[in-house]
Image 1 (tube, one colour):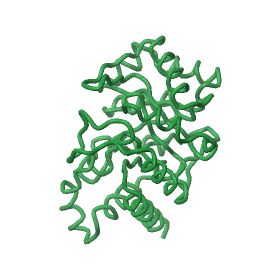
Image 2 (spheres, rainbow, N blue to C red):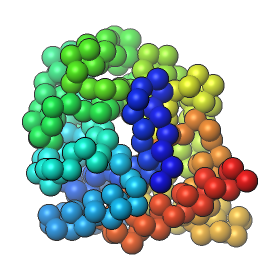
Image 3 (spheres, rainbow, N blue to C red):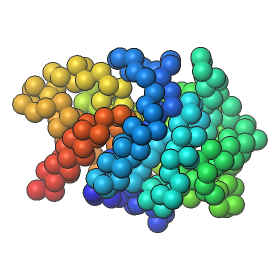
Length: 271
């Protein structure tokens, strides 16, 4: 697995990261089909396959239901194999989300995540934006809070899962990572990715497959005479600023196919 260094840190992440929303939450989500939460054995199988393929980045969040708790339980003895990325700012009560960006709320969230994940530190902490990116950064001083948490050794790197170009650019001025949506039919945040490449910062890509709505990407893939997965990764990895693409799946076969497609795309970029 090809790995990339996060900005000016010593953290290296696999070019594919495993998203864990489906480990802990199946209500009020945007996936095209309903699904049952997996049992522990199914999650362990996904983690085992991911580890064998060289995936070391696991992406979770308090808003992902019981994802953190389940990872904490199932990763015992394996913590050293993974880069854990969690978030703060969004809370989900089983029905709807609420957002809390005050300093005390961020600190409480991180301390709770550490307890749930049964670890002494988070490798990466992202602010989970509600879309009001600039206001969160400027008026809540969230990155000052995260810098303090880094100083305390509770997190190693930080950034924001943003929803606007302005927020993404501002994040890159103050933090290591911006997580942005990007795929062949959604390129509005391209400027953030370009900026990251120019300034040696890192980008995590979310919604690479349009939250599972692969039919929306089919026309682009047909134009390229490629599968949807191959065409999407080929498109995404043309961007030098991208460190990792987060994929969420409960199917080990799909995880394997995604990794192989990503490696093909990355190999093509270096030909």
